[in-house]
Image 1 (cartoon, rainbow, N blue to C red):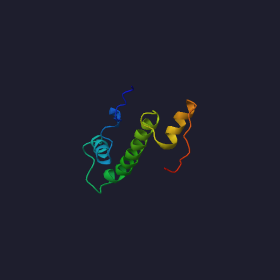
Image 2: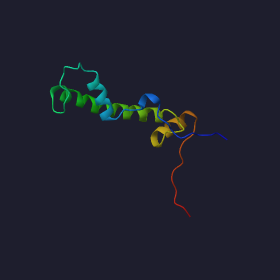
Image 3: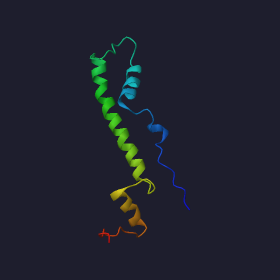
Image 4: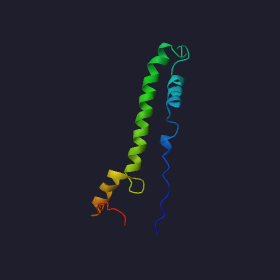
Amino acid sequence: MIDIQPYTPPAILDDTDVDTIHARMLADLPENIDQTEGGFAWDMTRPSAIEKSYAMEALNYVVQIMFPEWATGYFLDLHARRCGISRKEAVAAT
């Protein structure tokens, strides 16, 4: 029997929440740049951190649906179609 492991995101997707990404962005700025909340640098980097976090969440989902073990719904149907398998229509229980 095939042993299907629970999905574990790749290490590259660790620490991809908005605050962690934003902290890394601010840490890369020169020390003489004001990094306080509401400052120019903070305001200009925060939206990018938010969008990158969204992109990393989407990437995580894409990794999941690439493999039949973790795909669901429509994407699992696409994997099955490659093997010549289709979903049966639902019927009422008796």
